Image (tube, rainbow, N blue to C red; front, side, top):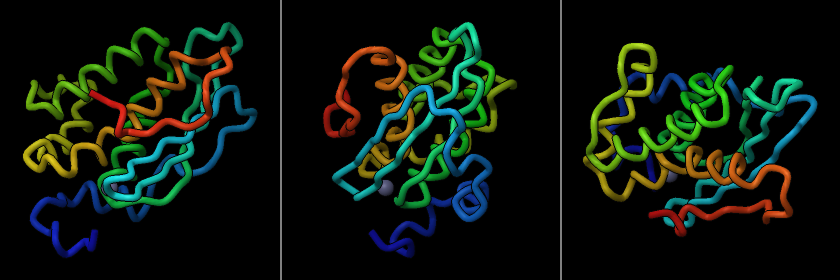
Length: 158
Ligand code: ZN
C-alpha cells in the first residue's frame, strides 16, 4: 500500500523509527528465531532473540525484514520495550499491546513510547501491521525449545 494513502495516520515518531530503526539486525548468538508475515499488507519480519544465561530474561531482540512503516516501527518500538523483560512480563506486554490495538487502554508511563501506535487502532486494515511483530514474538516465546514451525502468519491471530 503506498505511503501517501496513509499520510494522516503517520505520526512523526513512527516515520522516524521506520527510517532510523534502533533495533534492526540480528542478535548474536541467536537463541530463538521466528519469521512473521502479514499477507494483507505484505509485511515480513525475521525476529531474533537472545536470552540471558538463565533463559529467564530477554537479553536482546532484533528484527530484519521488509514492510510498511507501521509494521517496522512497531517492531522497533517492541524491541526496545522487551529488552530485559522476563518471559511472563513480555507475554503481558504483548497482551496489553494487542488490547490497545483493539481500542483498549494506553500504556503507563514506563512504556509510554508504545502509545504512538494507538492511533493505528482507528484503521482496522493497519492493525495487523502494528500487531505483526508482537504476534511473532508471542509465537517465538511460546514455542521456544519446541519444534514449532519457524513461520507464523498474522492471518491466524484473533
Ligand atoms: Zn503493513
